[in-house]
Length: 221
Image (cartoon, rainbow, N blue to C red; front, side, top):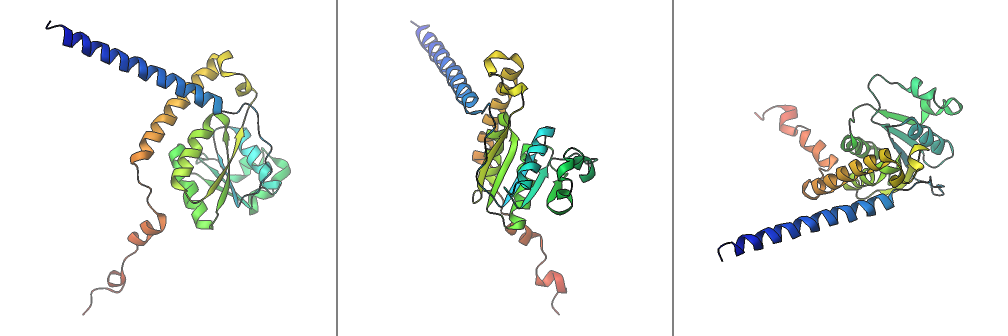
């Protein structure tokens, strides 16, 4: 009789474990189904365009969108610190002129969180209310979540980039399956973090950093 409670507890834990694994796998299937395997034809126009680096095709597609008038200005975020505009322009020689007038580079971001922080700074600084988001298809759910978390009042329009290697069904490619599973775990962790992470208003933060009248003019006599 003394062992019955232990057996019952073991069965409960086993049931919870099975339910957890089933929930995880169902969530992964939902995530994988959401990832597009074909690029979309963008028919709308936004104030700005942001490209999250990680593949040359992302930058090329973003510059082509800018050239076609889908946004007034482009931010390329997460650019390596040693990479300059001239090097990126060589990848799109037909639109090299745009780098001199309408393209900004962010060298600070090191990951998707950094991309979102720098995009928020750029977007609010220019007063933009809508953005076309350019990144790889598998990365788009997490990028949209991070950007939406920090730019709740800005309309985000996804433009997923699909390379030939990623166009294959995930179940037919071990590499694609591993990539999607890794990205799904990162997506879950990001959602969990964002539930408890406050978004600091940049205007308020800047106001806090500015010295008050007394600090600017010295102590009153």
